[in-house]
Amino acid sequence: MKQHLLKEIEAGTKNALLKKKIITHYIYSGSSTITDLAKELDLSVPTVTKFISEMCEEGYINDYGKLETSGGRYPSLYGLNPESGYFIGVDIKKFAINIGLINFKGDMVELKMNIPFKSENTSEALDELCRLILQFIKNADVDNDKILNININVSGRVNPESGYSFSLFNFEERPLAEVLTEKIGFRVTIDNDTRAMTYGEYMKGCVKGEKDIIFVNVSWGLGIGIIIDGKIYTGKSGFSGEFGHTNVFDNEIICHCGKKGCLETEASGSALHRILIERIQNGESSILSNRILSKNNALTLDEIIAAVNKEDLLCIEIVEEIGQKLGKQIAGLINIFNPELVIIGGTLSLTGDYITQPIKTAVRKYSLNLVNKDSAIMTSKLKDKAGIVGACMLARSRMFES
Image 1 (cartoon, helix red, strand yellow):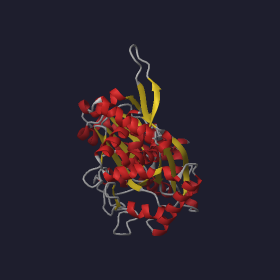
Image 2: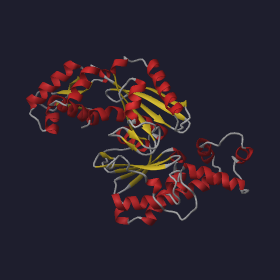
Image 3: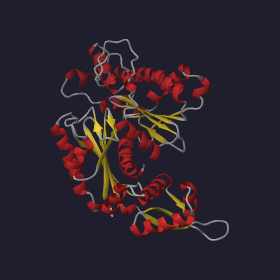
């Protein structure tokens, strides 16, 4: 099935385009009758019936049985056949990777979290990444021929259409997606990690029908994902969402982008890490004081989050200050985009109300009342799984969305 489906899509025939539209419809709606599908695609019922019959024979679509109605004949419900294909998502973190496998219907079949991996911009790290993915595939209990696509989340500037990464693993003239496809032996696409988290939350998280959404990823860095009218907004070259590099502060802190004064320098996980160490070295106390002053191993962001949730006053104070600074700038985004929903995600969102309450207070203070009353602010439902769920979902949708 894999080769047949891929060849049809690559050929770009009219039939293939209609099949892609039908699959995309079922990705977002789950299931529907032929009549509803015909209305959605603006096609005749006989045309849709012919395509659904073909796709049932080919194994992409399943007949889910009769839909009970109040009168007349009971129409059949159709949807994606879960076993007709599989997709892999890979989410790269600073010290680990997460790998997931979903079926054609979008259910998570296998998930491995926190596989040790040091994210460095070296060819050795790239080879290790490929080795870990191949190891996961080898251990997965599915027919390899049915793995249709692998999507890998990469931080920084990523062009998902061309497959180029400009921040990480940019060693060759060729697109990174092409290099990975060659190394792994399966079709590979790439996307920005924040955009993947946004899509994961949109498909499987706290989104309940909202179409205009901003997802704020407060992890080691700071980025946003934007959904406008139900579609992910990437910008001209895929570089949208670089919220952390808005010049906000008159400080002398050099951001990893090389500039000074970026929002990320005072409102991110890296800022929390730096400020906490500075304040402890200046004599303030925390349950992490001995850990930091002993200088045995590098302090991780996860340790700081754990200290916040154990009610460490210094850590809480710094997180609240970051929330206030962040909320002030999110107020500007709300004034510009007028979204229905703002989702606070990423590692720092695991502190819950400690970060979201200062954000909400600052948003009320600095945005227009008429605008902010339209915007609900909530914490990510998928938490640390947002990226891997999004990577898996993107692996599937990127194959079928035109």
